[in-house]
Each structure stands twice: as C-alpha cells, then as structure tokens.
Image (cartoon, rainbow, N blue to C red):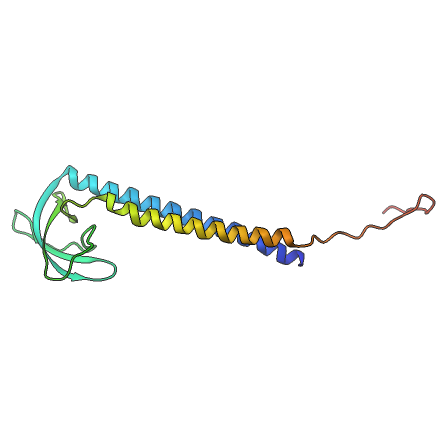
Length: 160
C-alpha cells in the first residue's frame, strides 16, 4: 500500500467521524429548537380547531381561525403532525403572539426524542464500524521502510 493510500485512509477515517459529529450536533439543535418552540407556545397559549388542508412529506398545512376572526395558515405547517390526513379536524395549540407557530394539542418536543435518538444511534454505529474497518486496513498495511545504507567503520562517509 502506498503512502498516498495510507494518507487517504487516515483522512477518510477522520471525515467519517467528523460527519457523525456534525449529524449529532444537528440533531441536538433540532431538539433544542423543538423545546424552544414548545416554550413559546406554552408561554402565550392559544387553542383552536384547525382543518388539515394538505399533507406532504415535508410539512402538514393547516387552517385555523383565532378569536379575533383572522384565518391563519402557518407557512411551515404544524409541529408534530404524525397521523394527520387532509380533511381532518384537529385541536391545536399556538403561540398567541405568533399564530404561525402551532402544534397539535397534547404533542410536545418529547415526540422528537425517538427519531432523533435513533438517527444519532444509527449514525454512530455506522461511523464506528467504518472507522474500525479503516483502522484494520491501516494496521494490515505494511509500512514503507526508508532505505538505510549500511556503512562499515572503515568506509569514509561524506556529509553534505
């Protein structure tokens, strides 16, 4: 194995671990954002009945009316929407100061623990396995020894 290949394997192992760290940090950020959103909603709690307009892979769009008669359609959809289908009527809780921040009533950030925890667990299982495989390959590699000239004590040696 060449020195260049060994270098790429070492860089690859570091990259695998760096990606795992980034994914872990992103998951932690998502959990903190969910907790912050829940605190904002709980701090200025408003409740309403909403109609589910559309369900897509990235968001669930709802429509609800606040006590002042204004109809709101949060552009980012509703938080914790699992199990909803278009046409459903659902109780929601929203931030009265920002009605675009809404969640299905009774659902909180604790619902994000399982998917985020699973993502982190699988990420690290894969990262550790790949890093271990790379490490094993590096250990099996025969190190390239520099050539050493053998000089007996009577041979003149020139320096420089």
